[in-house]
Image (cartoon, rainbow, N blue to C red):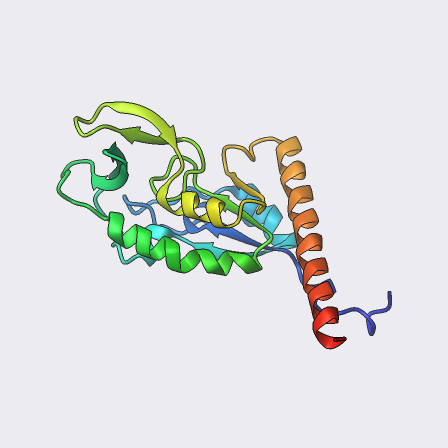
Length: 193
């Protein structure tokens, strides 16, 4: 296909949503980052990023009190570690519901492992007495995966090996191709009644 006949979508780089702390931004509760060199130095050459930090974008400050997920009576709350009366569940839930729609234009997502907002499977859960009772998804990632179940989603821990990185990128490119194919098919149907 010549450059003149290529659609603008054919020339776009994949767009991946990435936790801002993994990109080297000092947005964590303690004012630190968790920069991952492979993401910032290698992946950034091939992909564009949609930067996100549910906690900061929900209005929480940097630095801020640490929170953890507390399960009880059918609910999951983001409560302060030092001050259990601090409850930021509403802010994180509101952000998650509003932001998740933007993921319809991304081709993959890389989130911070273990985070109360971003952890995919390994965020510790506690009971009301502070005892760890298991692990699961963070508040934002839980909503994101429920709304976009086919979206390639991973965290920095899962991307530690070259094999895992290549597998994730293959998923991203397959997802991108399917997404653009559906959009182009829908465009043809709308244009040819």
